[in-house]
Length: 148
Image (cartoon, rainbow, N blue to C red; front, side):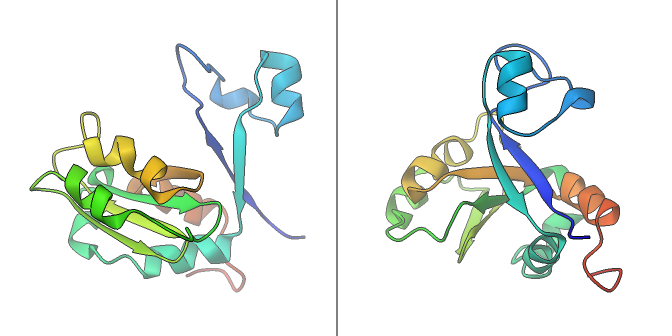
């Protein structure tokens, strides 16, 4: 049996786009039951493990809520890296590796112009998760062979 991890975009636990965690189903079923259809990015555990191994900011792993991996629908053909750099706060660092956007934001992403504008400047759909969440997902769905 193949395992996939479904990463939903635009889902909140409260407010607009509300979808309680216990009720997650894929695409059209969400639309039928909740009135909207979220974008869903499926990744396999191997892709997750590979992205985590390639993390260019290992020092961010200790405070896992400050390190974010943005999974892209595809490698961006024409990313505006100069535009992304202009959004970057002095404390933030980023790196694009193929179809993963790494962001270390020690001051958080709540007010980060970079976190808010990266997807638009990359030019492809992206959904991000912090290191803590990804570590939990990796434990729940280990890569083939039982680990990373």
